[in-house]
Image 1 (cartoon, rainbow, N blue to C red):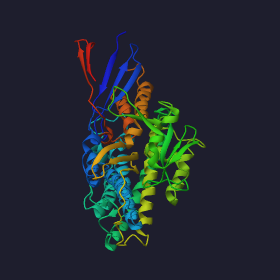
Image 2: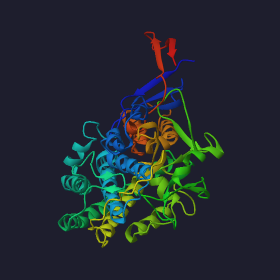
Image 3: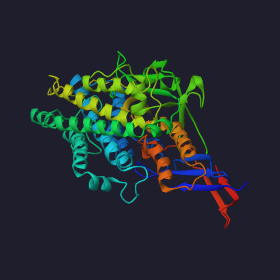
Image 4: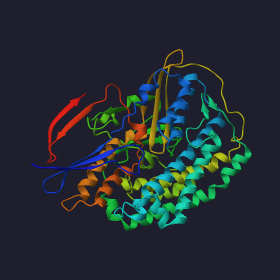
Length: 475
């Protein structure tokens, strides 16, 4: 049977490099669509031999979009290696930085990366379906979006001395306290940040109402859901226990991150450098789950800040009594988390301990192995280090947020391709919908691609008709 292969490369408006191949049948329908993560970094391997205390400075270089997440997850591992729980003020300040990261990342994704699809349309001319097109279409909204991201970045800059790759968290605490003037400067920006986020939610709801048919058929499928929760089951982004629920919303597991290897394993496919995590007890693919904003809002019981919690109730009414499965509602979920992060910034800044100088625990009780966890904007981030007695890193394992979502992204690509490409002429707008299936997860592929051993190489020889005549493979 003759087949056609459509290649989308690169997938646009994401962080990192990926391509999609859509394998067509003779009748113009899709046989299967694959998401290929064709970027290799190998961060785990080249961290071996470094000193453990260097890791909070090294691992942020994995990514320029979410360096704070790696910085803080790594610092949490180092706290445990030296046996020094940070003072309360240090944890407040670390969480404050993390909330800045959530705001700037979620804000950028909704307005600058997903926004062109939602505000200009999936079928808009690619020449304008970008942030420049948004500026031309609505300059006032574009400026507000820039300022929202700036609000988050300025929190990071105030604490860490720079907007990316901060130098702030160290084993046992942080290296800088917060001044009253700095606190007041951040507080002054909260009202505008909140107003912009509320406006974003109104835009999302209006778009969802007008495009309900698309939302209800665009990569809607059941999975488990995974995220951190606090001791009473509330949404937690900085620290807490891992919670995993099943497709119907029932609790499967709740456990400390230090035990993640008891519950999570990783599957490998030969067409991607990105692994496929899954819940061990259910196997692969039965045990796949989703992380990130959609996963977290499905997994938690509530949000412990008032404005975000009210919006969570509206979100859950989309599918009463069950998890929200619609891939496009990741955008709505991110805005709800942005509300929470801004509210949490206010709570942290008004805590009487936030200006204390008690920011470092100098106790030392060395351990050779530790795990750190945090909810990066894109999902649960795990750092696991094994350390020699002299402090040298012996082994590193990273399960990065986007990795957890690999199966879901791949399934979404296949689902959207089969839903929208079905016998008619393949328009650019249809291919953009396939890209949007990836974009909805806000993947950070630079963070996620890692492997051990030799990289596979595949050579395909293609004749003038486009047929593969010979394949050579090196494993």
